[in-house]
Image 1 (cartoon, helix red, strand yellow):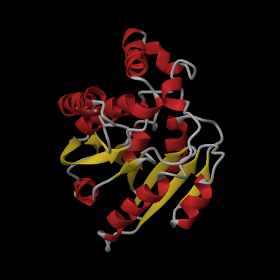
Image 2 (cartoon, one colour; image 1 turned 135 degrees about the horizontal axis):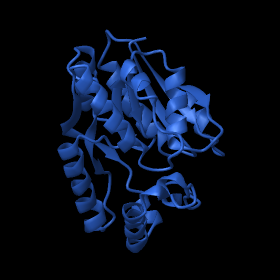
Image 3 (cartoon, helix red, strand yellow; image 1 turned 90 degrees about the vertical axis):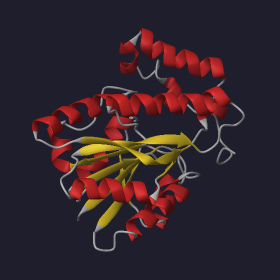
Length: 247
């Protein structure tokens, strides 16, 4: 197996079909490479597993809720030497996927990520437009990958001991820092792709008010140890009852 795509998923039956279809198109564009998609069902209560299987993905399970733990479970099951971590509500452009694959397979990069944009802004210009733009500036400037799309060679992943499992937010930042350091030591690079941003769901703009989102971000800035508390990171884990995909 040349590469493995890992998707952590908790109750994602609404978003998974589009995400898996986009990844299937990416895979079809690499006919000479053998790949697989692994969906990590993170103790879902909906049809996440059934939807994933119907789309041709391999399903594995991680009972304990946690994004780092789910990603690590998928990596443990992965057969590929090149790893892609994609959120279940994220569409990856084919050109971005191909670029990441080429960089790793040619030894030009050991790990990296991509800038992003929201699928919709729901009339919230500051949060829908300025917030992603600010993150993209941080990502490009400090070489930090967003959790929605991360790629790395398996040796880099192992050297970093995977994603920290005791953190309930920001685990991709800690992984990025360790991966960058390893890449520097081994003479390769950590790349942030900027030409074709991945498209991730803006559903939290509907689930939470502007002040609530701002306070959640402020909490982590003022009290960084909050990322070790599931309760204090409820913004990332709790969701309202959904009647389907946000519109």
